[in-house]
Length: 438
Image (cartoon, rainbow, N blue to C red; front, top):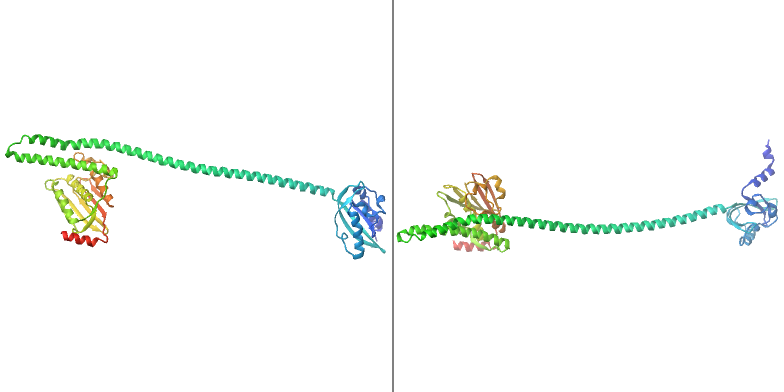
């Protein structure tokens, strides 16, 4: 059984339409308004009585007024729908002539032989205002973002410029710091050299005054005594004093030669003069000079595995270096002790060894052995300049070789020279020339 609500169908429908917030308008197929709800007053400013019987274009501004009738005519002739069942946004015109945006939805229905259209109109003013405000806000936000982006970009560019300047400044600072460090190192090196030079000068003055005094005293005393020996039978005495003078002069000459070497070395005037010579003949010269130095009972034992070999060295440097080592071995050995003079070829190296049974070198002094003017503590009472080993090292290194040693206190020392052998395409020619001399 239908309820009272269901039985009141027409009244119910009318109440719903009247209570609707949106405007609900019904027109016939000629566009004449046949019914309208109360919402038309709030939306358009008209009462329903003011609109019923009038064309729907009353609620439309130009050019929609003229377009609406053509929509209906086309629909009736051709069935072409432009609004019906679709819905769209349009523009409405209020009673006071003002226009506003609307959303129009149209549906079609038939009563008997008549066709009607019902349209629901929704005022879009608030939505459009919100959309407009939102669009304006978006535009403002976009402009703000753009401005902030530009500001950020400028700030980043400034930071990059600052960073580049800092990098440049840091690089320049490092460059100057490196220059300062180099300059500081140069100054320190110059100060060190200056101190070394002053120290060398002090040691030179001390050593020279001591080393020169003895031979000069010998020369002076011998010259004074020579004047007393005037008879023929006193010739042996004169010869003895002349020999002492000659020996003292040789000692002074050796000291001066050592100083001259360092003077030339410091000025870059010490040039190598490599020549071809035979080792056998070279050894004979060294032996002849060394025998003069031997103390009572001392002897030199030689062992040369290859004697008749051609060598291409600075003969003077090599002779000076070897003779210096042999003279040291004689000087720091006691009477009746043996000095060993050996040589051989090992691979591409020519090896020379001088070994003694002398006083040796204290362990704590060995690291300073090649230092100029240095003398070990156990040789202070033995004549010497402290330059010999330094000169030997300099000579051998200039020839591309090296000097090493082993020593044990009160047992003896062994010095070893190793020099690269310069054999090349002329080796056979040298051997022929040398064999012709032998």
